[in-house]
Image (tube, rainbow, N blue to C red):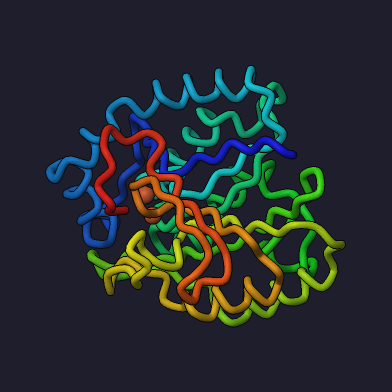
Length: 263
Ligand SMILES: [Fe+2]
Ligand SMILES: [Fe+2]
């Protein structure tokens, strides 16, 4: 048996974000409205204190491994990423090892994605076996007999209302290569996006993993038995069945004052 602690969607921010003029006319401009005027900041007002309590728990409860399924930040500013990595203890040797994937809020703009802001700040949580030397995702880490497989299902989007994700055919091909290299053992995917809602239906058009069918089939072919994810700010567990080949667990938003079902 292994003991995992799964957390997600902490949505931390920084006191000084570092706005530039062009940010006002892009995704971050409308994101600011959502944060400041539509209640997101209020829902996450205790986030820093919750993280402090969570880390104290991680240090004392004897976990073998931590798992973070993304949305470390709110709008992927450099300042937020640095602050979030610091507050989450990415380089803190007193914490158990952690495996992390980015959420859509960590790849909020094409600039943040291109600069690999998340991957640099969270590199200590992205160590593992890879399909090749040039691509970060997917990667796998063995914990006891279990292979944890980190899959990046997030991407930047242009439209203000677009919160869709995609794993992509190239990454799924690398998943196949990676899985062929792994020795036997249970396989668990860590992804930001879910495959389906708790009602086992595809998510709303602008909130879903666009290639969820392809991702599901590739994970099943890899022998995956469990899919851990965030993105849905609600906690639930679904068992395999009704055409779904494995179990999955939504972590919810660890630092939110309520579960809204929105990302
Ligand atoms: Fe998300
Ligand atoms: Fe989120």
